[in-house]
Every structure is written in structure tokens, then in C-alpha cells.
Length: 205
Image (spheres, rainbow, N blue to C red):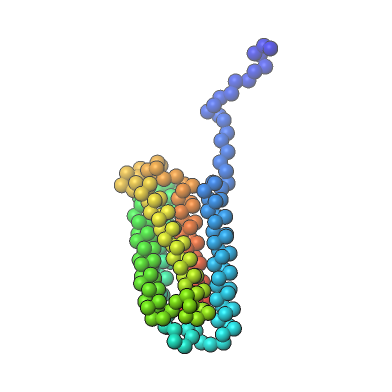
């Protein structure tokens, strides 16, 4: 075979197709779908038992929930979600220094988790437990599941911030953090932030 019909390929002109969704993002979405189904099932069971009991929540002998304190914690969590959203826009626009936005969001998320934990321990000390009423186990499971999700998302976001190396960020390289990891981390945090107001209305009111 002669080489007359061979067309040389220029590597610089080779088309590289970028997938619509990265593998980390797909895995995170699958996890969140199953997680949302589990939480929805528990919330549905909680509301059904609450309606079946036919009593004002909380039942007699059970502690009142701290609505005002939880509202403050909720505001801190929502603000952290807004900061992560702004960090995502800054990332896409190629601007520098998104590290402070992520760090502030992590601090607000830690504030939410810490003070919610204090409130939860106080409720348990006042009589709310897994065996106190029919509502007790479901309430503890729902709030505990959300707390575990928040802790996991905070750890993931903290890893993303460390890999970001904000003090050495030059806009393009952004340390060793890639867009796929950041996308998965913020999806987890959006889920934690977005589902909490629903849980707050269903469980506390």
C-alpha cells in the first residue's frame, strides 16, 4: 500500500468531547435521589402518626421545640447556600479568590450543625427519645439523618476548600480543585440547605 491515500492527522485539531455530566456529579445525583426518598418516607410516616394521634404537637409530657433558635440556625444555613451559589458563579466566570466565599459558607454550616446539635441534646435531656412517643423515633431519625448529611457535606466542602489553595489561586488553575469535584460538593450542600426548610416546617410547626 502506498502512502498517497493516507491523510495525516494533526493532534492539535483533534476534537475532545466533554461529557454533559461528570462521573462524580452523576454519582452524587444518584445518592441524593435515594437519600431524598428515604427522608421523604420518614417525613411521611411522621406526619401520618401525628395526624393519627390527633393531638397538638408536641404531645403531653414532651418538650417544646425551640422555634426561634432554630429559625436563626436556618437563616445561617440558607446564607451559606447563597454563598456557595455565588462561589459557583464566580468559578464559572473565571474570577479569582472564591476561597473566602467557600470558607464563610463552611463556617455558617458548622454554626448550624453545632447549635442544632446543642438543641437536639437539650430536647433529649428534656424527655424526647426513641422510646418516649410514636413521634420521638421518627423525629430523631429525620433530624439525625439530616445532621449526618450536613456533616458529610461539610467535610466534602472542606476538602474542596483545602484543595482549592485559595492563597495561591491564580484564576485558571485554582490549585488542585477541578470543576467536577466542586460541582459534586456543592450539589451535596444544596441538598442539605434546600431540604432543611421543608423539615423545619414539617417537624417543628
